[in-house]
Image 1 (cartoon, rainbow, N blue to C red):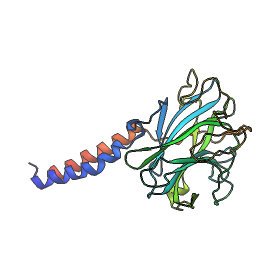
Image 2 (cartoon, rainbow, N blue to C red):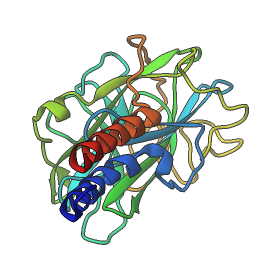
Image 3 (cartoon, rainbow, N blue to C red):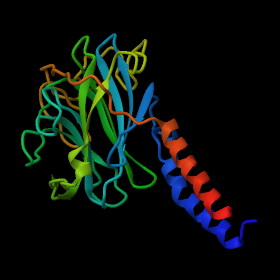
Image 4 (cartoon, one colour):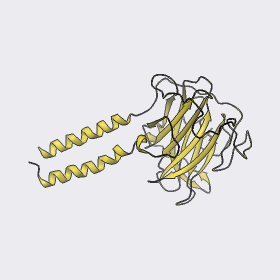
Length: 262
């Protein structure tokens, strides 16, 4: 029979494992409904998304936790490659504790991060906070008609000083935060029959009430550019299956329980 100490140890291990099981995209309650979601492989980040083939749009909610209060998170698309440099990104951070996150657009041509225009149309951009210090970036973007995939990039980074984002850490995880997001094919989600979640019916991509087409907008304000971006890349998506995560963690729990009980 198992001793009391062994059972307590197993329960303690279960407590450490259970957060890993619960922290999946399928358990997150983002404020907009999406067709699919994936647990991104590094930086404890998640992507909820819907691809609408009818109007070549991709609507996303990117979820990540800044390493420290005042740090930033970002998600974007690289139209020409698979690296961070060259990416067209949405970057968000909380200006102070408890404040609503601010989001702006960044055309990343160097590690000196400054706001700039994107090379594709976008709309309905906003950021929100979630319990656990999570930040969510919502955006809808125009992708090339008939594109099979886009090169997505994501990042969590350095402290924001006077509204200026600092350089992100150079850990292996930070350097590996790029993957291909499949839009069509057997491993891609079904296309949405109507307009993408969060898009404004009847409005042209890249436009929003009060916005100036072709100009970068300030923090928390949707904006637009007039030049469609180009997207493409390798054939394999970089998703992690929720069921695999659960199975691995449950298997570890059972194995540990067997060792300590018997």
